[in-house]
Amino acid sequence: MTGPARTVLDVAAVTDDEPTVLRALDEVRRQALATWPEIWEALVGHTTRGRPGITTARAMILKRYGKTVPHLEFARLFLGLLERAGVPEPVSEHKVTVPGGTYRLDAAYPAGRVDIELDGRGHETEATKEDDRVRDNRLGLAGWMVLRYTWARFTSHPDEIVAEVRAALGARLDNRRPDVAGSATNGRRIG
Image 1 (tube, helix red, strand yellow):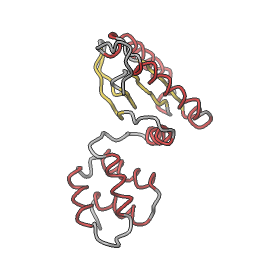
Image 2: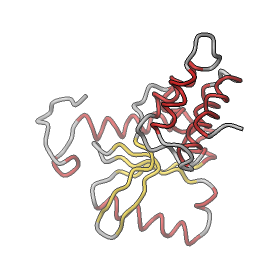
Image 3: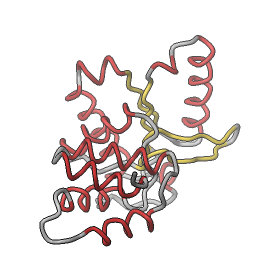
């Protein structure tokens, strides 16, 4: 029997499928089964010549190290879509306080105040839909652009989603306005 940190390495030893290893790592972190130092200790302690999976495990640990991991599989897959498209990685589970409430954003680009909300099964009831609209309005009034995506749209129109996220980032990061990002850029390109 091995601990959670070692389990990530064991998964990497039996598959070179990066999404599978990343899913194992994300679950260990999401459930707080192992800390980053414990995961690194396991990696360093098992990095020996010829041990299978170490390269993949190291790459996935470096990819997520120090970040809040996505809480849902939909979010994990969404991050993969953006990564494959060459879109910068958003911050997962970003906490923001605006007048009227504190919210956890599924994925966010805080510098441009772009919020990406992933509407899975938990967003089907009328009460939840109403709460989402109130939240979106509050975020919008605080200068956030909210993009909402359903699983159906994610699976049927991924290219449109990537284009919309790129357009939102372009609108928000290329020409920051004082009311959006807190400081003007005088037309200079950011990034």
